[in-house]
Length: 374
Image 1: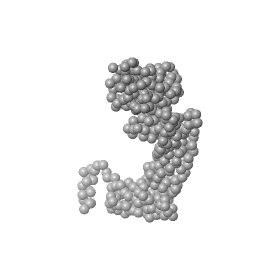
Image 2: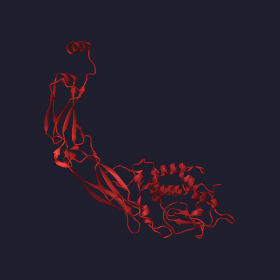
Image 3: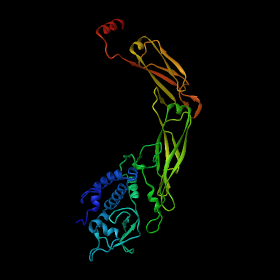
């Protein structure tokens, strides 16, 4: 029988909720009340802490058994021994030990009350029981994201690796990590955690076709989170520069090591990927540029001419005396993109046609066409 339902009510689930129910409830609530989406709203911040700590306990089968049997207050006051003759919830021997008091977490004792998490130790010479370790709401959220808790969905509106920079956009759940965990570099038993691998965050940077043709430089300012020696969050700006060489293609990457958010003692690597903006006339195919001109059916049959601009702004006359088939193409050697590996060379420019057929014909027009056309 469940002793109390505080944590279940916090998540908005029933006492017989499945692990998937608990996961879904936390995902929904954490995104709604995350501090980065509710700046200057202490109520939302407290709600986020309560949700995170409730999820931390109820998502762990062993912790949930302890909570169901003895209640939240039993956990937060350090865990007195179970009633005589009771080995503990779920058969866990021994009581609880409290390693310290840390801010945040549940509001059962008022704002600023202690936050704890605990883990079981196996039987044997160690005496068993439970050890509490400090764990804050951002750490829980970060671990949830890293474990795929958001199933690849985007997290718009949260302050992540780019914060309020001109780059905009939200981080993907798989790449969204908060650096809060780095404040506790050692385990409860004093052993250091193994060094975490730096995460890689990728961001598309758009360039026009003209910029990719001639080369361009862009300066970027990213906002990142780091921690001082006391574990306090520090926010700082980092200026970066991307130099695009003439002829570079979409998909090319610029890699910056260790310039992103600090996560568990390491700083994120940022990769910026070239994205080609749509052009009003050309599409790119390797180093060639392909443009399409619209002509009427009459022009296709009797002849036409058009003036088009090359990628570097030169005017070219394109024409055909007709009839012009739909597959017609004219090639202009050396008027395409710069070859990035050899800037002295250029690809070709190709001009195609799109024949616009009339939407309707009168009876007389059809009769005349039958007389004229073979």
